[in-house]
Length: 284
Ligand code: NDP
Image 1 (cartoon, rainbow, N blue to C red):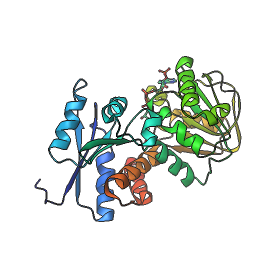
Image 2 (cartoon, protein in one colour; image 1 turned 135 degrees about the vertical axis):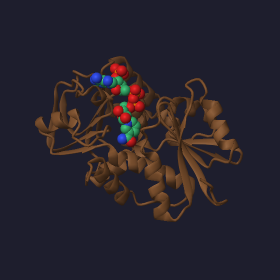
Image 3 (tube, rainbow, N blue to C red; image 1 turned 180 degrees about the vertical axis):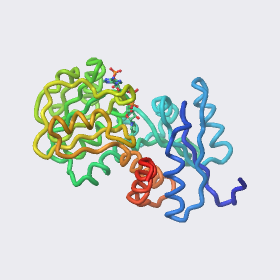
């Protein structure tokens, strides 16, 4: 395809990357806002991430999203060009060039909070159980605390990794330290207003084996995974009494909207793009 000189070029870089929905989302945002763009897939060799990024920007690329397994490498590559969110998360999912230097941000937390707000739920004052301690969990910890949650408990299959996240938080944001605790999956005891599954357990067709957690009346269960059917975690949560359940498709679209805003200075409306994606995913 021949681009006009005003066409901005974007891509998502990862390995693997071919199932990404980012091109469809960003191209829809482009049509919605009237910004001419092309958004591609960039599969990088596992040992060649920096080269892939350099090559993309050297050829005039405007912005890159970063996905598995490169978010931490992208963080390292940005040096002093990190936003506060990216610095605190230790991971980058949005890259661009500014004043000759590589800049990086992490929009996952903003995406999650925007999608929780769409469910009509305010995180302020809520007791939050976060399941998982990988990159996705790390990206949403600080935004959840900054949104004013009352308590945040991190549980993970490898308890040491959950503790590692708590230690990282305590070191970075001492003022929130009293609110945060960590443990193994079977130490999820307590009553929770919001329970977030940030593990990839659904890939194995299972819900994370949490124990001791109770859903408060009207509580939200949120799975970062998404698909045409309720995930195993959401099925488990309904049976355990969660009042609301939501999957991560809205987070995906909202984190993309934030990246689009960073790159283009225009905020797209995520709602219609989410609705379209949802109906396509469900084959309607
Ligand atoms: P990582 O590989 O960094 O971490 C995986 C996490 O899942 C770890 O905490 C791991 O525990 C845990 N885990 C894996 N399998 C199981 C299992 N069977 N039972 C319990 N815990 C398990 O992945 P990410 O953090 O990057 O991603 C996690 C999920 O979030 C993915 O499914 C991803 O698709 C989704 N995601 C969605 C986004 C969205 O916009 N909707 C954005 C980002 C991520 P352990 O440490 O013990 O190995």
